[in-house]
Image (cartoon, rainbow, N blue to C red; front, side, top):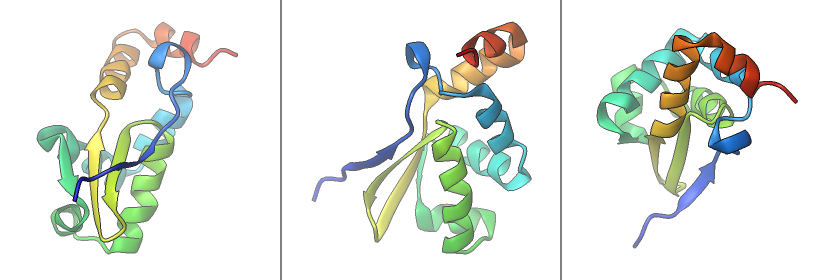
Length: 111
């Protein structure tokens, strides 16, 4: 059976995540920062493997991955029983750009 992309966060202007403030807010939680670090090292990971690596329950992982998904930092694919989380490399590159030049984050957040 082929895995299907279940959810992908909406992109903002020019493919950037929609809201830099939402990205930084999502990353302000230490567990989410750690979760993103695991995904950046591996590109993608199955839910069960992330639960073990982080020492959290399905419910807690779901709560934190939802915040990263809404911020546009990760995608989720698979079935309800076998979810796989993947980092959005384009979003991480945008984050790096915002950290290098905060003016680019301010410009991205303008209406």
